[in-house]
Image (cartoon, rainbow, N blue to C red; front, top):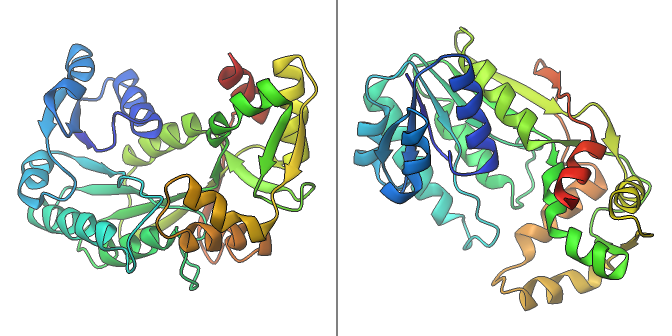
Length: 285
């Protein structure tokens, strides 16, 4: 039995489906029963737990062979990341209490970066779980290709994608969420000792101009990438409802300036199978 958090999302759902296809039993950890029905219909057990609730997570992680940890995303954290720290504390308490045989934790490319940015939430997570006396794998995927879902409407209606990753011809490691979930499930089925880092990228690095080219083919209309001036980012993000745009801005700086990158340094590097073209075609419908 494997307990899967974040199962209602793309990555967590892919983890669960991969395990089910391998005839493994799955416990779906969800926030409410309604979200668990689709998984119970597929034969999963369902456990109800908020990610900040250590007692509920402890019940969810009891009597399982492994746990997949996918913390909720927070694109507008308060200073000092208190929301992430509450989740991290609860997850660590639950894992320490239940001591599953192994844990796979979704982290991120650039988790080793020392400069504070939006991805520092995963840095804190790795730091807390690294001290647990059990085998833990930190899966650090590249930028998600599926984030392009935010750009489809603009590309379809106006023939433009607004690019925060710059310059437009700079190749960035990206990966499909389907590959992230599949690899996470495969890691859960392995045996290892201690802590390890697995870095995951797609079969190709991708530029913003290449994304525009694939959108041109998928949407059957010309699409171009336009860089968004950095001096306007703060106003744009605030207009979208962001209280403090600095963590997100610094994350983008990290990719553009090159200090958010794969660490190497003994980490295992894996390549996914899904190409940008496949993701774009699926998102474009």
